[in-house]
Amino acid sequence: MKNLELRVGGVPEHFNLPWHLAIKAGLFDELNIKALWNDYPSGTGSMVKALNKNEVDVAMLLTEGAVKAQAKDGDFEIISIYVQSPLIWGINVPEKSDLYQLDDISNAKFAISRFGSGSNLMAYLLAEQEELQLDENSFEIVNNLSGARELFKQGGDFVFLWEKFMTQPYVDSGEFRRIANLLTPWPCFVICVRKTLFKDAQNRILKMITVVLETAQKLKKSPIASTLIASEYSLKVSEVKEWLELTEWAQTTEIDPNLLQKVREKLSTLNLI
Image 1 (spheres, helix red, strand yellow):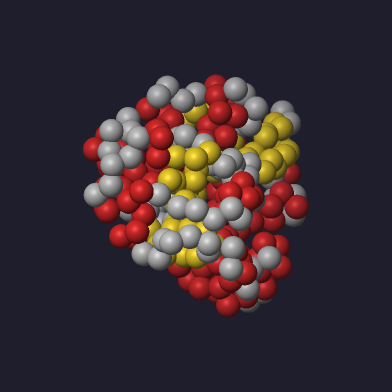
Image 2: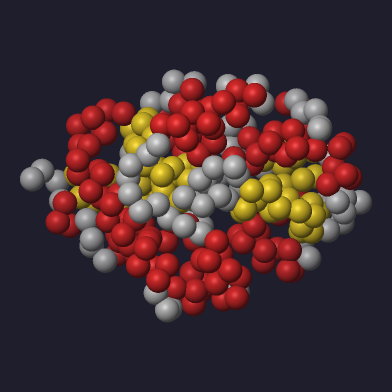
């Protein structure tokens, strides 16, 4: 069997620990696959760009970002759900601001990693919920979580949507104030593969993903999982235990086309595709 080298990308967050464990343990060796991990702190928008430019082969994208990009002729296939449970987005504001509840954000700007990212798309979902009107001037591009932290040091009326547990340390330290949470109305992460690559190596890639999903199930059941994740990502063990209880990785690579259609319809309703 010919060796296959794959560039794999994802955010540097706890959701992707199963990939790191599988790679370190050599679990893809029997498939003659060498997986090279690449962190994308800027998130889904930057990974979509990397997929389309042939800079990464396999990527864990937020579902809404993947569906939006694919609707714009993204050069990749959505081949599997990765995380079945919804993402809990923390709605964060600077501690030095006059924003204390959702009713206060009508004139605030949304800090986003980039247009087309999850932080951008979920802002529209929140705006629909709160009956706000958004346009391109409603956003401030900060690239990633570090960029949001720099922006928030200045104070001001900004809102930053990012995964609740990864932003918790900055809420605890007083950099951020969380005024609410927002859940995605669908599974939060999907696995995407460049079209030409998937056409040529579909069976091996699906077997690789099956190995990752099996690793995720073992991690979730492990008695040391919360301690390991807390250590790897600088989180509190108690918070990781809560996150593990709420998080469900997919158990099969099968994907329901009705699910993706549901996401398309919602994004269409929001005039995003």
